[in-house]
Length: 215
View: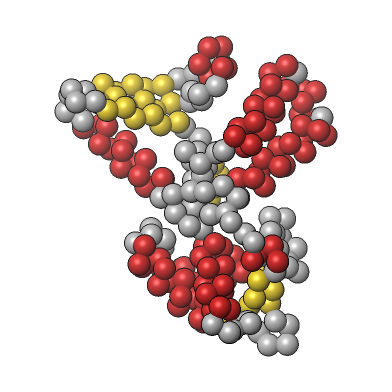
C-alpha cells in the first residue's frame, strides 16, 4: 500500500515499517524509501524499536491505522510501478535534465492521474457520490437532488463505519461535486458530474462518471 497524506498541500513524508513475530516486534520510522538510493546510497536517518513488550510498536501501529483508512491510500499496480520506475531511472541518471524533460514530466502527470483510479482501503467521497447517483438513476431519477446525495452518502459512511469528520462532511461532499463538475475550472477536475443549470442542486453523471472505477 502507498500512503499519501495531503492536507493543504502538506504531505506525510516519513516512512513507517512494522514487523511482528511470536517473540518480538520491530518498528522502524525514518526517511528511508524502499528504493536503491534509499537502501544503498542515500544518507538516511531511522529509529528502530525492537521490543518483547510492544509499547512503542503499539503506538506506531495506532498511527499507521489512523493513516491507513483514508481515501488517499492506494494499492499500486504494475502499470503505476512501471511509470514510477521509468521516472526514477531518469532522475538517477541526470536529475537536472530529467526535471526539464517534457517526456519525463508527461510520465509524472500520467502517474498522478493513475493514482486516482487505483483501489484503496476505503472509498473516496467522489466514488460514494457516484454510487448514490447510479443507484437513484436505476430507479428512474435522471438528476439527483443535492439533499438526497448528502443523506445517502452519510448512510454509506455510517454503514461502513468510515472515519470521516461528520460535522463538516456535507461541505466535503459539495466540494467534490463542484471540483469534478464538468464545467469546473479546478486543476484536478475529472469531469465526473453534470449540474442541471436550470435548477440548482440537481446532479447527474457524465460518461466518464458512469465508467469511473477508482476509489
